[in-house]
Every structure is written in C-alpha cells, then in structure tokens.
Length: 137
Ligand code: ATP
Ligand code: MG
Image (cartoon, rainbow, N blue to C red):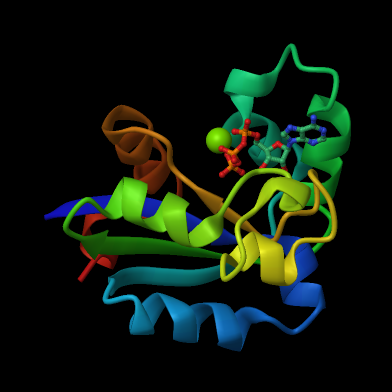
C-alpha cells in the first residue's frame, strides 16, 4: 500500500466541485486516511510549491493557491501516487484525457482543480506538510 497527498485546489472548491471529486476518489477505490479544509497563507503556498520557486509561474501559482479554501487529503491505495495522477489527468487540461478530473473541472493550466504528489519522497514530505501522524487513520 502507498499513500499520496491530494489537494482539491481553490478553484474547484469555489466552483462547488468538492463533492464530485471526493466521490470520484471513493469510487476509484482509494481509502481516505486524512481530509481537511485549509486556507493556505501565501507563505504556506510558497513552502508547498518550493520546488517551483524559479519558475515564471511561481508568483501566480502561489497567489492562486492562497486565494481561498482548499481541501487536502491523504489517500491510500496500491500504487496510489501514479493511480491518483492518472485520475487527475495532464497538468494542462487541454492535454488531459477524457474522463480525467482536470478534463472535467480545470479552467486552465494554472487553475487545474487538483494536485497530486509525483514520487514517494515528495508524497512523504507533502503528507507531513499537512498532517500530523495522529491525524491519519
Ligand atoms: P501538481 O503539482 O499541482 O499536482 P503537476 O504535477 O501536474 O501539478 P507541476 O509541474 O508540478 O504540475 O506544476 C505545479 C502546478 O503549477 C500545476 O498544477 C499548475 O497549477 C501550475 N503550473 C504548472 N505549469 C504552469 C504553467 N506553465 N503556467 C501556469 N501554471 C502552471
Ligand atoms: Mg507537481
């Protein structure tokens, strides 16, 4: 079993898509081991996306991620990291496959509805960024 960090980003929360996205998570067979509504500060968003510090989109991205409430989830499944990234679809919704969450809910490459960890090391860091061990069931 593997764990990954998922985020329902502020655009999807504002568009009232939390229910549909959590429903999809359950239908896909993930076990939700942590779930919380957060309102990231700019500094917290910058910390979370620190690997992208030098990218041209860093300022806009961290402004967006701190623009309103988001839902953070820790998901467990076999191959949870790649499984969740498949359900999410490509970063740019224009390239996302039919049936993926980003195809369904993303507005553009930045406001793309959901986040997922990209490797076991980053998943561990990202899960710890939002959840204490005792908060994971
Ligand atoms: P995430 O890390 O959020 O799951 P990802 O792994 O598919 O997405 P990354 O390359 O890690 O994509 O980019 C992180 C986030 O930064 C993207 O989800 C998107 O919100 C934003 N982003 C990525 N590329 C661009 C871009 N070219 N222009 C604007 N925003 C971008
Ligand atoms: Mg990423």
